[in-house]
Length: 452
Ligand code: PHE
Image 1 (cartoon, helix red, strand yellow):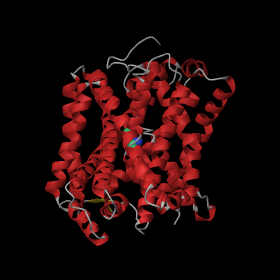
Image 2 (cartoon, helix red, strand yellow):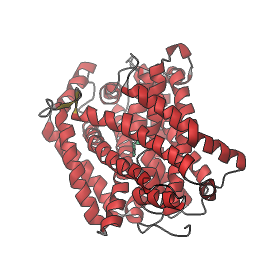
Image 3 (cartoon, protein in one colour):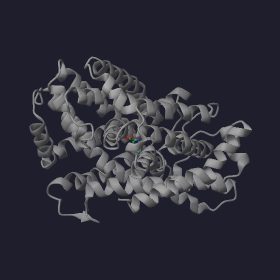
């Protein structure tokens, strides 16, 4: 079963796989969500819980996704089917793949709208429109954008086309090429912004905010948010990593590779925090400003700083690149499935899927204006999709993947792919059978029935 390759292609090397998976993992979750939820949840202690979740739950599940994909070298649905069959398990486990594809499509529809906001911000930072604005003005500018469907439609369409074009070009010519250029660019931009944050005079304050652990600031809810987020940020629970894993070469060690991806994703989130908080503190702004931290507080801060126009623009370019490489990975599992199932060309599959997600995106962007009356359980379409995917579908996918890997797949097949030492394998197996599903089930329960 092991010397096969996927009909979609294979990554040129282990490092390309690491960078492509890191490109998927590092996204709006790291640069937009992580800093603001850290801000809302009091800093240091939250960061510590988040790190523990990545290590104890996220990494083991990512290993499972990679090995399932690599063993079968097919799209997630067929991969799960093949791997189940080999271990004499039920083929129904492939439902996880179906649910994952659906999650990817739904996430894309709001992700692309936020990607569109980011493109718009690159433009207004570049033209200097945000220079010297007050918080009120920045708040009004962001609010105005949300209520302007035609501008949103333009940027959402551009972001969708950029993404579909890469997926259509294929694993090697598309995803791999973008990865080779954009990931190094992303790391360089992040370091430049970190250096800039160090010149603000408030770097120490930012550092303390993130790393000074004060458990009295930690609530149960914050711990749950940390675990939930560790899923979203590592792109787990929906088959993305499984699809990327199916293009991985046999020689590479899954354990080391996954640890590297997890470490890079975490590093980017931490450095993004260290780049953002000093700028916020230097301008006496509130670190707990919530989702508006990036689109309201930061532009105000940049607008008051030396070279703010340049660095503000670079900042949004960084976010745009991160969002783009993640969006690509949201579509890949479904495109791979359509190509393999219906024997259609990749370009046809990509465009067909592109039209569906683009149209769904319109429902999301209208949530703030012409469709604001459409609500599901009291949430507009945008918030509802964010909620059910990140809080329900991904964790559920994660539980099922770990149960499948722990209880259904025979140890000898798992170990054949993972090649861990005996002790490490036992630890991983324990996590799949118990730790990960139980931890995620607890989060799932409390996310649906909030504590306060
Ligand atoms: N990991 C991405 C981020 O942090 C989001 C994502 C989730 C991408 C699931 C692919 C699959 O923004």
